[in-house]
Length: 515
Image (cartoon, rainbow, N blue to C red; front, top):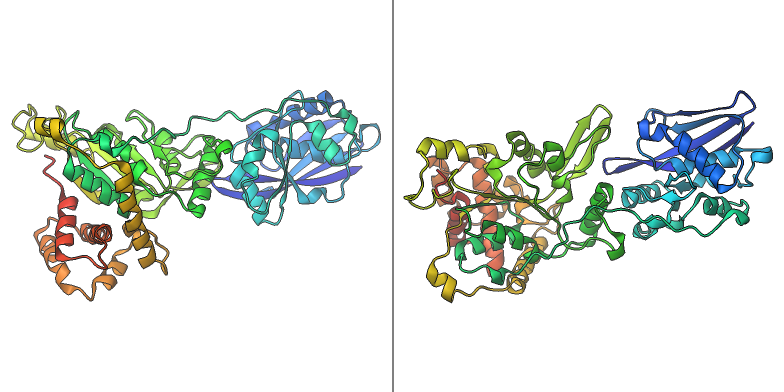
C-alpha cells in the first residue's frame, strides 16, 4: 500500500483555499475513485491523468487508487487539479509503477495545471490569485504550466517553477530525467482585454459643460450620466474618461490583474495592469455577461472586469431592467456577491459608472424639445427605464447638446494630458485629506464624515437644506452634492469648498430636464 500527498488550490470567486491532494494505492481490484466534491470537469481528470501518465512513458499503477481532495466539504471545480493528482498518484506508486518520485517535502509543494492526453501541461485561469492564496497560506513553492510562469512570478514571495510537461515535473521531484523530451509549451488563450487607446480629449470640439462634468467625475471618482440626442458626442466623451484617470496604485493593480486573471483576459507579458480598465457591454448583453454568473461557481462579468476603472453603458435605457437594478449593490458596496447552488463567489466591483442615454425614443427631446415627435407620456416612460434609485446613485448628471457651427469651425479643446494633470493633482489632494481613513476618493466619503468635515463651514449647507426641503434633492443627493463640491475645490486647489463650489456641484447633480 502506498500513500502520498501534495497540494492544489481551490479558487472560489477571488478567494483561494489550499487543498490537500492525497492519493491512496492499495493491492485490490484496479480502479480509480476521486472523492471530495469534484465537479464534472474535475471528475473527468481520471481519464486525462491516466492518458498523460502513459503518454509520458510511465506505467499506470494496476491498483485500487483513491484520490481525496481535502477539505471534503469544499466544492472543487475545474481542471487545475490534474497535475497535483498525477504527482500524488505517481509518488504513491510502488514496484514497477514507481516513477521514483520522492515524497519528502512533496506535501509542501502546490501543483497547478491541466494535463493534456499527451502529457503536456495546459495553462489555467486565475493563476495570479491562486498563487497569492498559496503564498498567504504558507506554501510559497508552486509548480505551474510553463505558459503561466510569467503570471505566477508576479506574486511577491512565490518560488515558482514552470513545466511544459508531466515528465519535467516527475524529473523535478526525483524521477527519471531521461523521460523529458523537448515539448512546445502551451500558451494560454486569452480573451481580448479592453486595452484600446482611449483617444484624446482634444478631439472633442466644444461641449464645455460636459467636459467640465467629465473632469469632475474623473477627479472625484463620481458616477456620470450623459443625456443628449444621437451624434452629440456622448460616446466620444465617455471613451475619453479612462485617459484622464490616474494610473493604478500597486495595490489596485494587483486587484485588477487578479480579476482579469480569473476572467481569462489578462496577458502577463505586459506585467500588472497599470491603467484603469474600460468595459462597454452592448445593451443586448445578458445579466450574466454584465454582472457575472454561469453554472457552478460564477465567473466575473463586465462589472468586475471594470473594477478600479470605467463601466460604460451606452443607450442605457435599452438595457434590461434586471441588469440595471443589479448594479445597485456594487455601486453602494464596491463588490458583488453572486450566489449559486454550487457556492457563493465574491468579486470586487468598485468602478465608475458612465451612463449615456437619449432623452426619448426619437432622441430629440433636449432643451425645449421643439423637434421631438414623442408624446410626454412616451418620454417619461422611456426615461423611467432608468429607475429613480439607480439615478439617485449617479452623482453627475449633464445634458450634451449638439455642437453648433461656430464651435465646429472655431472651437479648440484642451488635450487629455492637461486635464489628466489637474485630475491627478485633485486625486492626490483628496488622498492626503483621507490619509487616515479607509477611503481614497471623494465619491467614497460617507455622509457622516462629510458633515464632520463641513461643521466649521455651516453657511455652505443653507442652499442644500433649501433644496432638500423643496424636494429637489434627496438625502442621498445632498451627500453627493457635498462630495462633488469637495472635488471642485480640489480641482481649483482650495483647502475647502466655497458656496460657489456647492452651487456648481448642485447644477452638476440635478442636470437638465430629462422628460
